[in-house]
Image 1 (tube, rainbow, N blue to C red):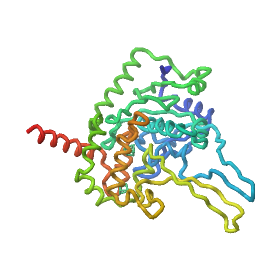
Image 2 (image 1 turned 180 degrees about the vertical axis):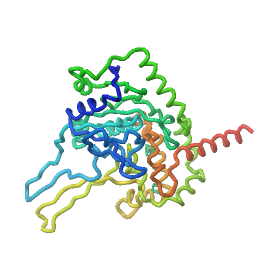
Image 3 (image 1 turned 30 degrees about the horizontal axis):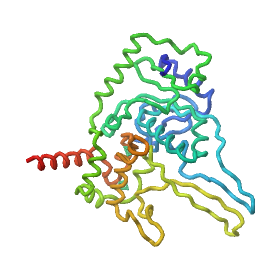
Image 4 (image 1 turned 135 degrees about the vertical axis):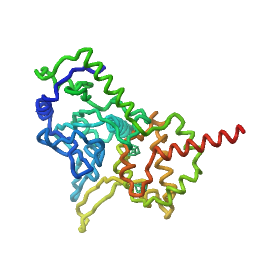
Length: 349
Ligand code: SF4
Ligand code: SF4
């Protein structure tokens, strides 16, 4: 159960200084007219509070696009497990928190990923409420409310932020309790409830997500896949922007004299032509249709059995990043569901 307080928006500088006392603060910053990125900030004026989705999700803080795992020189091998300084990630919305929770699961399962976990454990995560735009569908995926992966969460309740503290790390930040932190009353609790109720009404895109496995199993030959496959450029844009896409490649880079080198890990994409190529020059997902179908299934029900969750958190990044207007997940699911309904009607006629 979270510990709840509030503080006035006028006191945000005090809260910011408190975050700085923990470590370097990273927050959404406007980087072009329409885009935002998590960047290090030194003062509150740099933060784009209006940012809805950043270009890359929070995963980039813990799972960088390229990193060295080990290096060698002669017979000496060096382990590059990071020793990160404490840092704060501010302004993470509920869908991205859900994405972070999924990545935490994935990188902790099996042999724990020391690189990811070292950075994750050094980070205080501060969530922030938001209002959806037309591309958001986290309400369909059950990720529209903060459930986990945050230490502190702020909800905008007008002149104040409603403050939830979820972890021991978060509690330590407020010990001793600073003067700008205030006790909440019934009115604040009502304002908090009103915010989330109004936000719920603000969604314009949604679908029912309780039959996705059935839809993807039964509609695997639906014409929609051929249509999308014809337009897909296999550019792979949709995967780096996804908060839960984690595929990577590991490559060995040797020096020309053969005496030194490194083992690098870098992001990969299941939408690239060569991703599923194996020895013998066989490619088990050779065309865009196969790759798109795989990706949609993976996002919308592929993890149901192993993790009991879906890996799409409804952030809308793939929709806004696809140069071919393909990744309209809501539109595709609604079409598949409509086909299913039609088939059921035909059977009962
Ligand atoms: S599949 Fe698209 S909408 Fe879903 S989490 Fe990934 S980027 Fe966001
Ligand atoms: S971003 Fe669009 S065009 Fe590019 S690989 Fe993904 S679905 Fe295909």
